[in-house]
Amino acid sequence: QVQLQESGPGLVKPSETLSLTCTVSGGSMSPYYWSWLRQPPGKGLEWIAYMFYSGSTIANPALERRATISVDTSENQFSLRLSSVAAADTAVYYCVRGTRHVDFDYWGHGTLVTVSS
Amino acid sequence: ENVLTQSPDTLSLSPGEGATLSCRASHTITSNYLAWYQQKPGQAPRLLIYEATNRATGIPDRFTGSGSGTDFTLTISRLEPEDFAVYYCQQYGGSPLFTFGPGTRVDIK
Image (cartoon, rainbow over all chains, first blue to last red; front, top):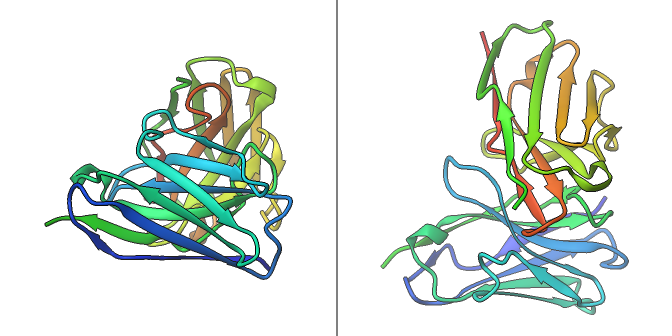
């Protein structure tokens, strides 16, 4: 059974860069789709970006100037970098796998990132 | 952007009752790429239904997805205690590529 685990700082200062890593265990990264989504406390879900295991990426236009995702298939990891963060970026961040390119079938537990000085 | 609207906001029901949740899109969803997720407090969402009508692996048959075009429905035939949660619909296509509805909360009456 594939498992995903997010890791990274739980507190980031405004204007700095948020960096998270997702470690995938129990399965290969190919030939799947890998995404980052987030959920502000008490609110709904927002898709940030996704990539095919080969490295091609697509980001949410609302975030694409600030969001970068990358994959390291040799380490079974993929990462998110979100630059110039503000309080509105405070959220639980999820790493997610898609067997199909159109939905999300395996989720990490999520990690809360708070943006505050 | 393909905006998804879910109704009702909250559904208060008793175990054993049936539930009908609605998801309406502002534009036609290509190839019925509409999914439903269940989220319990403190947990990640779980995929229930994909491509409008297909149950995901391990999902009980009391969950049924239907609909096409812009109007979709998730039906839970007989609510079990573990079904009380928030349900989100999600579409694929357009820009941004993925959008979610605001959710419907199913509460115990």
